[in-house]
Length: 304
Length: 285
Ligand SMILES: Nc1nc2c(ncn2[C@@H]2O[C@H](COP(=O)(O)OP(=O)(O)OP(=O)(O)O)[C@@H](O)[C@H]2O)c(=O)[nH]1
Ligand SMILES: Nc1nc2c(ncn2[C@@H]2O[C@H](COP(=O)(O)OP(=O)(O)OP(=O)(O)O)[C@@H](O)[C@H]2O)c(=O)[nH]1
Ligand SMILES: [Mg+2]
Ligand SMILES: [Mg+2]
Image 1 (tube, chains in turn yellow, purple):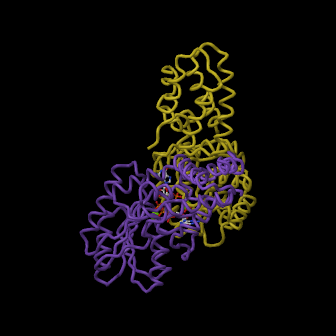
Image 2 (cartoon, protein in one colour):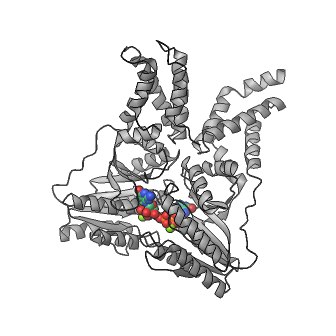
Image 3 (tube, protein in one colour):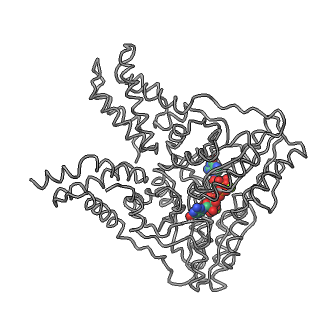
């Protein structure tokens, strides 16, 4: 159903393969294919526009260099641009000199916040830290129960109480301090960006506990709306990083590109499964070839 | 020819581009968006329509027409209980939708039993149990890690014994590219067929924020479990859920219900007109 950008580009490039120079029309033709492929990968339309504009510039610039054929130049420009957008500075966690380091999790319903909270706790534990989980989702049925089960699987303490999300978060941090845990991960209820009350609530939690990091969990299967979501959460919370979930699926994951372009915050971690060890740092280059639908971009550059 | 010229001027390229972009931004997908605009554009020229609002209306008509063929009622079996399986990828709203549908059917005087067929995810059964309490329906569950097919089988047997009209069966979220999990789903369906009821519906729960992967989800689940309808959840957000349109258009799987919130009453029958107006609403005229 989805023709890969690799395939599409090859078609477009076959028409310009033999040429010594690219005309503007050649570049536009290739850009058209790139636009279509990015849209099929669920990159947001407005982001596609910004990206293709920059690729156009880069392709024109690259044409001055004679080391590559015209086709190679276009492919390289695309790959460079995607890695550039997805990458940037890699995310490195630093810890509060006066513990605990507080991390606030945010996201839409079902995006993967609770699972990711537990995955992060496991990750910190493996780094020699002593994390604690706080269940501040008092809304979804059995959300606290879910977090408690996951916490016990990784043998990390979990705190919650039936007060209010803000109170739980506050008390959770105090509890961590009391029992000497140095990283606190606060799981929150899923919320829609149009839900003003719940957006205010998470902003209030944030003001109350002053997290060192606020992570937005984004589902890799997300479509065009990823941009609205990321923008709205970033406006209310000042995100520090994105965590991508459900990368074990067969979605192209264009949402990653959209979100990164729009909020400009790094994608820190990625999840690729339901198990708590299906988690790790994010790799921009792998994501770029995934969105492009190509295993190895360099091979394509050689063929072009 | 004059009419055509005039149409071209009034309905400039800009209008069509904007239309196509609105459809793409609603997640209808590139092919379908281009196809719809092309089709309306042809009609507009043929009929000499010159006003943008008339053209927009024609697009809406065309979209509604494409959605018009399907039967959106819940299928019922010849002999109760009618068994409804809820399937879909992780976190889309399967368990919540069961809670809501159980309430809806109960309010219509139907006797409902729900089956906690997700024995995998942490606290999945507890979550369903809380929903069952809200609408005061019976829940049948197994131990954590139990064979989901046997939990569903037990629930159907129980449903038959107590004279239930419906058994609504939850299943664990699974990605359609995981063959072993899709095989497990096939087994759940097979075993459910053997129990004393009829699997009258397999509802694919689809999150409205889903992009083009939704088509692959529909294909994968249709292949494994013969999906009979879609529940489109989370339409109360900013996402338009256009991929459900693409699924109905291309795979002929009707959208039956939509989820409009996390409350017990937030499940309503699908309304094609409202859906299409949401998608095309932001096009300026
Ligand atoms: N396949 C897969 N499933 C995942 C991944 N991350 C989370 N999930 C599943 O997605 C579903 C939702 O995850 P949760 O962690 O409950 O999501 P949430 O954001 O906390 O959901 P709410 O609290 O309801 O808003 C669960 O079935 C998880 O097991 C992942 O990386 N891959
Ligand atoms: N706003 C909104 N939230 C919804 C809707 N339907 C479900 N949700 C929320 O989405 C989240 C996931 O719902 P679940 O019912 O747990 O999803 P699931 O498909 O059973 O998830 P898994 O069993 O983990 O695969 C929960 O927080 C629900 O409250 C809806 O129509 N609107
Ligand atoms: Mg949660
Ligand atoms: Mg569930």
